[in-house]
Image (cartoon, rainbow, N blue to C red; front, top):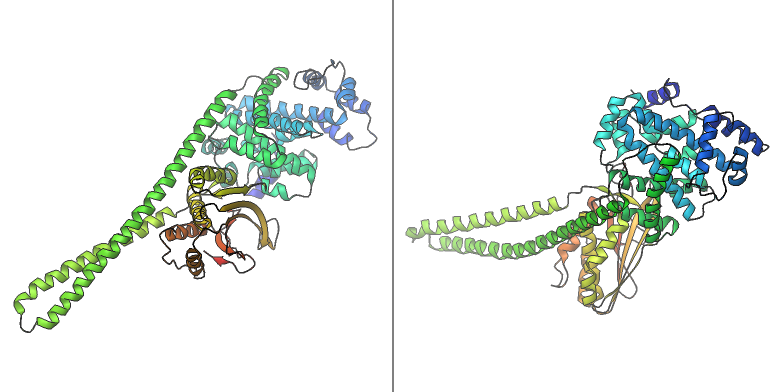
Length: 579
């Protein structure tokens, strides 16, 4: 079944989820500026079940009203027309989800995820004073509604999707597209259009997983709703799928970059999400869920984060060990190759001088030539193995990661060395950090090498600054033809203690891309080579820019999207010297 056939099927499905008439009428009448509070109340009261449901919910601690609401008109007077309309729509969607999940236990996680997303997104909106938190709540409920559609098309096939993504850490959309030809966001958009939902809800369904595209939108309503729902979805993933050591850190860094929220605020919102869910379940008769303890989540988070830090540390230590072994091996190979080759030359000369008169020594001389040649061949084989080790080290296994988190961990790792050298490191990571596929361990190695090089050039008492940004350059991208967006990391050193000969050697090396010359003992040329190779393997580029005072800036460019083959290497203005 093609994607077009599925979208057509969605509009014709007999078992397509249907909104209650009261919700449909409310959306239609609310578009009329002449609609009064009495008109809204009359429509709601046409459905006694919705009326009872509405009054019970708005009198619950979930809304925290100080006076008891006894009629729909009273509720509208206290909460406003827009709030009541969104509450009714939310109740309708909740009822649809509850009935579908009750009949299909395999959809339980989807049902729970939607509730957590909506509750947490609403809490973030309330925290920053957003004027329409109920609109955020319904946006969270609707965000992944397309999962119900794909399930309805082929339950057996969608079970396979859920099985492949049972830990919540995979790319659900990619799995859905592989099985169905489209993902839940596209199916959800189709349903939203059948329901004639407002355009902002359609936009949130489409884009809430992609912060980069949301950040480029001119429509402030869709952008802000999508950002709240994105945060809510991360909270849901933490509670439903469990902590992997990065989700909570990502949540806090993203909440800080989007809305300036401090970590302790995010911790409090996580706890309130858990408590509000309990309240909503009781007050809205939604039944029990398989809720995980918030404090168990925090414990898992700390444990997993520690494991990941240990893994990265071990990986970096292994890289350092490999560099040391390589240096020793290359030194040994150099000497060991010279000796047998010299022997070959010497014994060949001996044969030429003495062969006519001293045939008795011929076999012994040939044996020496054979042994020396064999030893040379062995050294060449060792060299080949070394190159294979490096190729293996450069193989990239990209996963969608948090660049801000990785950079913070790397700075923490080198903190002791920085302190011992008396170097002052400052950083500006105020620009929102994108999340995009990269191999955090390999790229971490590359950044460590560049930082080490910058520290050597800065010298004792020098300064190093780091700045990250997302910049637009000429190129092609899906959303902006003629432009593409890249992640830029700039590592700049300032100091007079570095040896001028080292700077001269570095400049000489960088003027010949692909050529590595021998630096002084204090500079690791293999580290430069490895950094350049790893960054290139990510489809990126690193170059060096020289200031008027001879200070160096290492500038890394990485493509944000890997939806297509890695883009051509980025060339920045000013003809930078490439590593």
